[in-house]
Image (cartoon, rainbow, N blue to C red; front, side, top):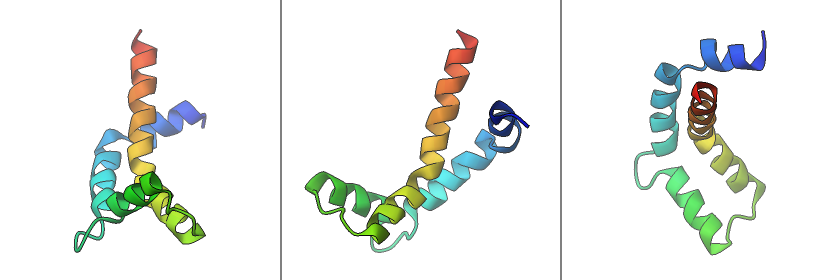
Length: 77
């Protein structure tokens, strides 16, 4: 299966959007990890490996949605 087949057939928007919402906002209380890690990145405090992993882990569905949107845009034009 080619990489385009994987993006088109398995990683659909129907799967990625709920994953982005759930992982992007988890844990819901007291503050989502993604917001905390982005704030740490902006302030230059994102130094520990666990924090870098957390940023990646909580943002990968959002990044894949961006890749799919960009790919869909380029294939249509």
